[in-house]
Length: 186
Image (cartoon, rainbow, N blue to C red; front, top):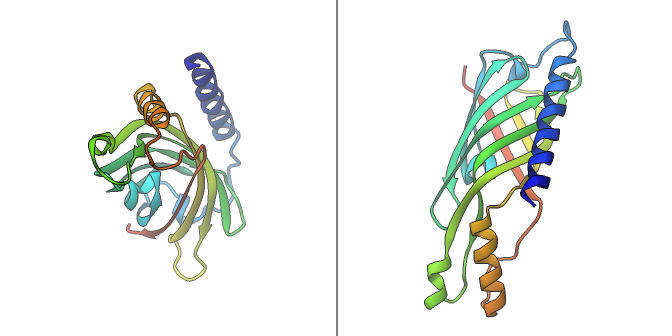
């Protein structure tokens, strides 16, 4: 199973860097994708620490390094990673992202012995989405994404143990959603 995950990660990274290398020069660049610009966002989803904030910096045109911190329903959640936005003359830009940090939580309902299983888990996650640039305030943008977490073996072991025990706990979703609004701060 780890070999399959490794191949998927390598494929996504290869495709990302292939698209970066073929990015069109000379196009108008949205302020939210321009080198040297920074943003501060609030939202829900992994890039925002589940429910929190995200700080991003464009190290190159269309390449954003980000970190997010928030509350993940068990403790403090965080993620850091990079996002590549494909050049577009339209108001929206498609993006790919990769990150590392909190990508799963287990929350047991009802307390008791199994409440000790309430825990955060960490690992890589990959996603794609749409960045919708504001018409009113240049540099501000909505961020709407789908994210696939690569969950750790510790998470899978705990999840399976709870599932076998018949305890009521949160449902596992294979694809996660993130939504946030980001303000240009540079």
